[in-house]
Image (cartoon, rainbow, N blue to C red; front, side, top):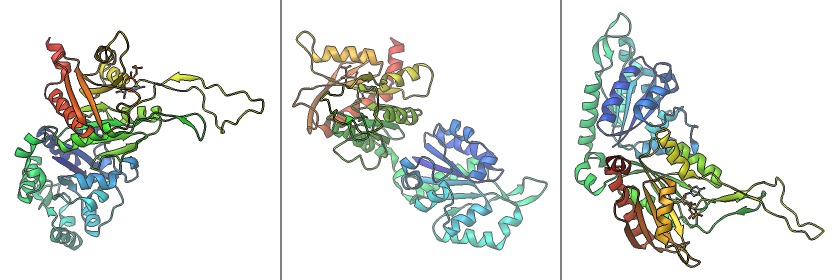
Length: 424
Ligand code: CTP
C-alpha cells in the first residue's frame, strides 16, 4: 500500500526511522513527510535513504506534481509519528502551514497519530481537547506509553515501540475495509502493485525562436495507453508528457515538458528509485544549434535563413549508462523504435540493432510510414527482449497494445532481464 509517514518535531523522530523500516520491509511504498521542525532531529538524507523516495517538507516544493493534494489523496494510510502537542493542535485546527498539514487535509484513508511529548503537555487541557476533536473526526490517536521521557521525567507521553505502532496501523487499515486491506485477490489481478513506473510520452518541441519550433507528429496516445495500463495493474505512475493531442492519464503524477532538454531533466529527476522506465516519447534527435532570442524576420535581400542542427542527448542511452555507473535507475528500461525498414534490412533487424545499441531490457518496435502509427488509434508492435526471450507481437487498439506492453513489463520486473543476462 501507499503510506505517508508524517514526522513532526520531537526527539522520538529517530524512532520513526525504525517504524519506516518496518513499513518498507513489508513491501509498502512510503513517502516520508517531515515537518521543517522534524528535520532538526533526523535529516532529510536519512529519510530518503530509508524510504528510497524523495522527501519534501514544504507545500511549495515540487509544485508541478501537485504533491500537496496528491500525497494525501493517493495514500492508503497516513501515520504521523511522533505527533507533537503542537502538531495535534494544528491538525485539530485544520491548519496547513507545511506539506504534512496539506496531506492531513486531503487524506481520505485511515489516519493514525502517535503522540509523544512531556506529560504536562499531554495532560494540558488544550491537548486533551485537540485529541478529542481529532478522534471525533475519525482520526485514531494512540495513547502514549507511560515511562521514561527525554529528560529525567517519567509519566505518560512516551513514544510507543515502533512494532506496536505498526501493528496498530495494520489493524486500522484492515478494520477500515479500505482498498489497501483487500490486496490478496487484487494483487493477483494487479501485477504492478507496489511498483513505480515512469512513462514518457508525446513529442518534443525544439525552439528556433520565441514563436517557432521543430516538432513531430506524436500524439502521445501510446504512452498514455501504457501509463493507463500500468495504473490499472496497480503501479504508481509518473507520466512525463511532451506535446500531445490527448489528455494525460488520470491518476498519474503528471509532469509536462516541452523540449528534449526538459524531458531529459525530468527523467533524471523521476527515474531514480522507480522500478521501470518506459520511453514512449518521440524525442527529437536533432535540435537547432542556435536559438534566436528575437523572431527570425524575412530578409530584405530575399535570402533564406539556414537552420543548423545539433544532436540532442539520448535520454534512454544516458539512463542505461547512469545505471551501469551505479546510479539507482530502474531495473527495467523500455525503449521504442520506429522503423521503416529498407530494401535490404527488415524492420525487426533494425529493431534488434537498436535494442543492442540502447542497452535497454525491452524495445517496442513499430513499423512507420506516412499513414502508419502517428496519431492513429490502432497499431502493431513487436517487443524485443535483451535477455533473448522470444519476441512478442501485439496488434490492435493502442489501449490493448498498452496492456500487452505492461504485461511484458510485469514479466520482466518479476525476473529482471539484467539478472537473466548474468545467469547465462
Ligand atoms: N530516445 C531518447 N532520446 C533521444 C532520442 C530517442 O531517449 N534523444 C528514445 C525514444 O524515447 C525511444 C527510443 O529512444 O524510446 C528511440 O530511439 P531512436 O534511436 O531515436 O530511434 P529512432 O527515432 O527510430 O531513430 P534512429 O532509427 O534514427 O536511430
